Length: 168
Image (cartoon, rainbow, N blue to C red; front, side):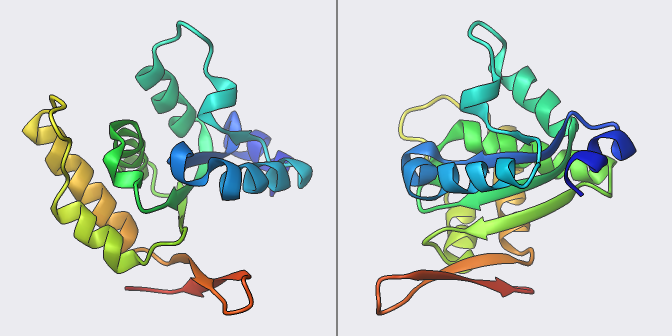
């Protein structure tokens, strides 16, 4: 569904990749991004696609709207980033308007239950955020944590396997 999806759905991207760079960029997300590119998927990743000086929020919003699907790599510190929370909220809002927007959560070294707990107690240590924003972010985070997705499991031999869980 790689390049054909762009013309079929008139999307600029096949996949919008949402992740917390400090947690996953070098360990997982860079590898995922390169694998998707090798398979022919046009993938949006914010550190490659946004031009310097461009309005970041509007560029992210446009990329989400112009993507056939979103892959959200949830990690231990994903919910501490207001940029990540803006992305996940925008993805959920987009899906409400365009029901065929597919979302695949990947739980990287974190359990879906942990993400649900984080959604209940978002803390921004001195950052100024509006209460309405926090409510929206919390609801979006909890909704994604309840979706079917890929969950990483560390093995005793040092390898990590991903298991598909259909619900939580």
